[in-house]
Amino acid sequence: MDWLRRKVLVTGGAGFLGANLCHALAARGARVVALDGFLFGGGANARNLDGADVDLVRGDIREIDLRPLCEGAAVIFNLAAQTSHMGGQADPLADIAVNAVAQVRLIQAAREAAPDAVVVHASTRQFYGRVEKLPVDENQPVAPPDANGVSKFAGEQYWMLEHRVRGRPVVSLRLTNCYGPRLRIRDARQTFLGIWIRCVLEDRPFEVWGGSQLRDMTYVDDVTAAFLTAAETPACHGRIFNIGGAPPASLHDLAEMVVQLSSGTARYTTRGFPPDRARIDIGSYHADDSAFRAASGWAPITSLRDGIGQTLDWYRTRLEHYL
Image (tube, rainbow, N blue to C red; front, side):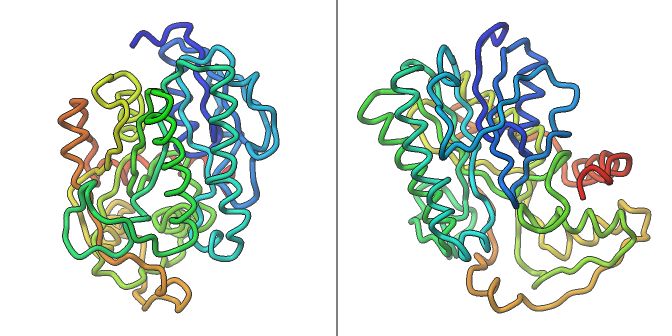
């Protein structure tokens, strides 16, 4: 796809994944509109868009008139979401308002203002829940472990219904643990690695809960490439795909890598899960993303060691802006 001068809407555009995508699109010459509500507890940060030629619209997807934003868009990258699992447990009504009800608002606006736009929807592996077989492919039964998983699954299904009923080219990417520059690191609301990075850079010990669980981490540049490729590849349209990353590693192995990449100065302690987190923990997970690789030709190229090293380096000069 030639992105030059095409209008592209990115919801959640000031967040971690959305902002990195906005930078990539602007570099390709697209006319990028980034919508973000800067909701409390989310990953949005105006600094995330520094240096990108992007039209930032501050507005809550639950309330703002979405039709003018959709008008003339060739592609909609839909990353607006409430992603905190504990936040969803604490306030499921607010959770579903963003992750499901607001998705219907966007669908209706796009029907009126951008009937031919390709939509790439950011989904999650969370609603697979605790699985018995690894790696996990797209045929794994859905068993959400928490309210956030339920709401995210509902939002995805509304979009896939739009494809089935209206014929809109929609792709849903079920993401795993994403990390890299512009990640929320002030706490663990986006991923455990965020708070680890903060602790390392502040010379404080970080905590590893459990430790034997396997995770496949996806570096943000590889995630961005997956979004762009999904939009550009007609063979992907109308389908749901898992997205993985580097080969899986245990949390203990990841912690040891972080220590090594911090010149050995970082330190951590291991403890059991807090009771409220233990109830929704999914155990080990890593994705079988062979379907997406076959359909699109995409493959992650960033190793864990390189990705974590690049992430630590990026925050060393920007830490104050992300606390």
